[in-house]
Length: 352
Image (tube, rainbow, N blue to C red):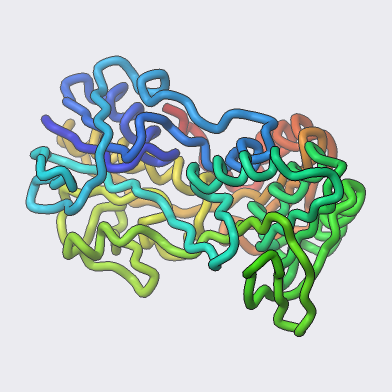
């Protein structure tokens, strides 16, 4: 049985490894544009120079899985066509190309490897008293601003978003913002209309100089599914059935940010359970067993505030906020989220 996994992010890697463990006879090929697994949620550390966010695919994949560097042009009819003119046949495929970043002109994207590397080089060359602006008030923006501020206390760091940390409950919201202030990050609740020639202009009419402007907003998905003729939603995400299979082709599982799972937002915390469920489903089908429907359940939201602090916000399974939250050293927050996850509807057993 031939299986092709398109994309080697969190969803693709976990799907490939889990399937290799469960179905020993599967011939699995992972196709990715680069020879490395990029840990996307650590790209803010990559650009700040505090960690390395990439590792060779060969070091991450289970024995027997083949990796191939390339870009997929189309998928369907039991075949994956690559841009170099070659193709691979499959009995089953996993589409796991994730989400994309469409930065405003004049900004550098945080959420791509290329953008993070460009930002790292530029940031390292900035002299003291330079200004770094982070556009985006969500988790990526918060973590980027905090990481840069802690790594380079000689710089002025500013975060701009329509509601910085607005995705947290009142007290957790205050904790996140006070954590940014302790790192001397300026918080601006406003929208950015333009970033050109070293000047950032806001919806309110205000403007300020910025030596490096980072774009920390995810804004869509690759068009591979649509380009391949698969049905997609208004955001370009492939429509799936209750088993995470394309509604057009039951041989294609779609997992992660590029899957139109009702109620799902972009998050690696959702990509990995989806990948695990899809791999389990395929294994069940091969064994002649009835598959189980995928059930989307949230547990929490969390952000790091530099290398030492973090805030975790517990949620209900439908992603609405609970009053409960935890704050403190990063390791403590992670441990608390894990220990209390079952109480708040966590899905477990998703590791490869």
